[in-house]
Amino acid sequence: MLIGLSVDEHIMQLLVYHANQCDPKKCSGKKLARFDLVRLTDRVNALRSFLVLSPFSEKALSPEDRGARGLAALDCSWAHAEEVFSRMRLNERALPYLVAANPVNYGKPFKLSTVEALAAGLFILGEASQAELILSKFNWGHVFLEMNREPLQEYAAAKTSAEVVRIQQAYMPD
Image 1 (spheres, rainbow, N blue to C red):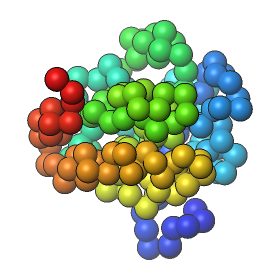
Image 2 (cartoon, rainbow, N blue to C red):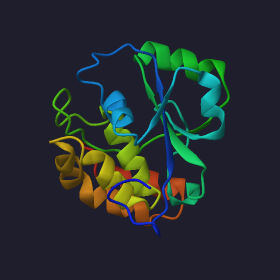
Image 3 (cartoon, one colour):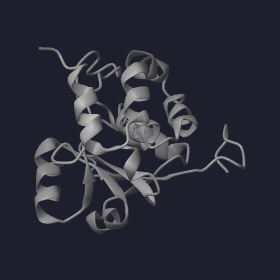
């Protein structure tokens, strides 16, 4: 059982493909692994049975994706991410418009850290408690939810990917 969640609450498996391309002191994926909140892998094949968060996906993550075995994120350079996604057929979903709260990309849309991406995915999939738990390991984590609470709630209430895309239009600057 994850600390902070009751026995009755569902725990979604979280996987992070980690390519060791970032500063280990700033790596949110590695920090989550130290708390046993995610599993790290360097094997692309491990992603096959997970719903993979990908900026290259044509389909937005939505509540219709509930029931997935788990959620995966890539913790690697964009160049490496493109290579990974171009080589494999994965069950990919893009996150809708959200603003980063992490210290490196604060206030920048779509520039989410690994923990922010996973938390957003969890929230949209109805796992808000687990999202709050993983964000609680970062002193700025609560800010991500505060900054994005309204769009996240609307995305989580949507029925389909197309509806999520329509909702995000209201939050995107002109």
